[in-house]
Image (cartoon, rainbow over all chains, first blue to last red; front, side):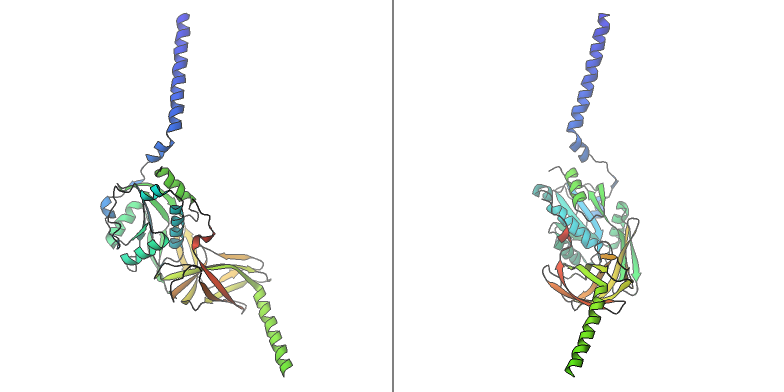
Amino acid sequence: MKYLAWIALIIVSGLAGVMSFQWLSAESSPKQAAVSNKVIATVPVNLFKITSSDGRFTELNNDKQLYIAYFGFTHCPDVCPTSLAVLSAALQGISAPQRQQLQSLFVSVDPKRDDPETVSTYAGYFHPDIVGLSPQEGQLLGLTQSLGVYYKYVDIPDSQLEYSVDHNSFFYFLNAQGELLAKVPHTLDPEPLVTKIQQLLPQ
Amino acid sequence: MRSILLALSLLFSIHLAANDAAITVNEAYARATPPNAPTSAIFLTMTNTSEQTVSLVSASTPAAGRVELHTMLMDGDVMQMRQVEKIEVPAGKQVELKPGGLHLMLFDLASNFAEGEEVELTLVFSDGGQQQLTVPVKKVMHKMKHHH
């Protein structure tokens, strides 16, 4: 009988120990869990070897912890400037150390009209931290396919635009290894971007 | 003679006022643009206070070579910009031209649009009414809250 009591005590305290351990680790791990976010896709880093006209970007680099890539075009009537304005607002909503670890990229899906310099000026206007890139067609195709970016050229015969580029609107969050950690859908509010940055770059 | 002219001009101004009353335009602004940007957009809200549908059929501004009426459609995740012939404002209803939806698209900008500037805008409606507006240039995020 005595032994049974001891056994019960051991079992109970063991359980308590396990539970408190779980409780403690649950308490301390949310940031850890966020950092080791699951990888959605991996982009071959070679596809990101694109030199911006200002030379600020040449490839994914370990100097930066996080990259945000947005795909669009400078003739974009509405969605791209809005998204870049939202991204700019998000960059104003994070700390300076976070900004230093982060590189934002605006990648043109319209290489015919967007030379590297045009894209660079365009992106930089919204926020000096945003670098504009205009990859060549083959590279663009590889990049967009591996990230799942949709774009399609559509003739608009009566418009001065001549053709538009239908495209989806996501912010792709990548690390320097080309691992896609998250994508945030089109938003008119910088908050979802700020939240995601805070999650992936805890200061 | 003078009184006839006066009467005529009075009649004319009443006619204009009647047209102005059909659609009220509020919160118009033009989007500030990066240097050398190929396009800009104008957003505004139209309220139809009359008892019949009135459409915006065209727009022009000396600040741009051409103005088109555009809409943005969503097909799943995909944004599709399309030109439209007119923007209908049903009787008693309000139609908002805003980012991610309807907008006036400006081509051949005379110069880039800097915040704080103003743009003259003429709107032409299906009932023959016209409106002249002076539209401020603003950044798109001007309405949105800031995070610090």
